[in-house]
Length: 329
Image 1 (tube, rainbow, N blue to C red):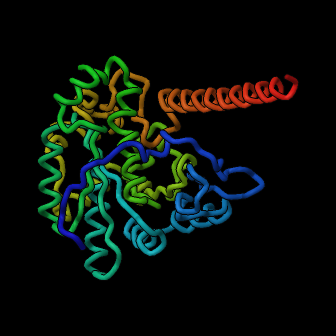
Image 2 (image 1 turned 180 degrees about the vertical axis):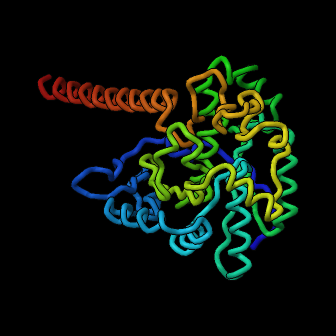
């Protein structure tokens, strides 16, 4: 496996949502498939690398529900090509990272699972310190870090988009800082499947997730290996296995994201109660359906394409009129 390193982001022009979709998602009843076709040019190279029928996905979930988290990870490594772990170095993701290191020790010749970290430029310093400690603990792990397009520091971000964008235009902020970088990562790394740190006990929309899901927008398979663990089980594993964790957890934080939208959790509150406290919001746009801003971008692109088509048709009509005038002269 390659040594630990950071992979900087490149142009956002390859982001799937920023391009027209000439091949529609294969999610209709007739096809029976749950994997989506994310092709933007009709070529097979941009089709999903894993395609599952609904019946197959249901069967896999039934079997995966019976497995332990580490066996789910073994299955994912054996079954899915181009498998990555998407992580913000939360407690659950750290358990998966540690388990993956154990699996690698069992089978050193197996394909490695690299990490994808979305650096929004608003993470706590404690989170960045944790990244360094994780890399020291697991030196063979490679971390691909993706930042908002065209900026490398918070100062550059605020110069380009203004201060407090997360308050003044929250959905736009989520798109720029999280959704677009994630799409760019998936595109540049040719991701087929990702491991996530979501669990049912985290509440909100997560209480109904399966072990295996398929993103209907891009066809990427999501695997939630610890979905049936409680926070207490996760913390117990971290302690027993001496896994590095975020120091903020010892200060009352349980779910840690950007500093501007994360606060400590009171006794008896859900572990994600400290995220976007006082707001109806529960997800940042990475795991939920398309945000209004994403839909807006698609609508603008559709209108631009319609205008181009109308202009082309008008040009043809004008040329035909000229030809008719010449013939009758």
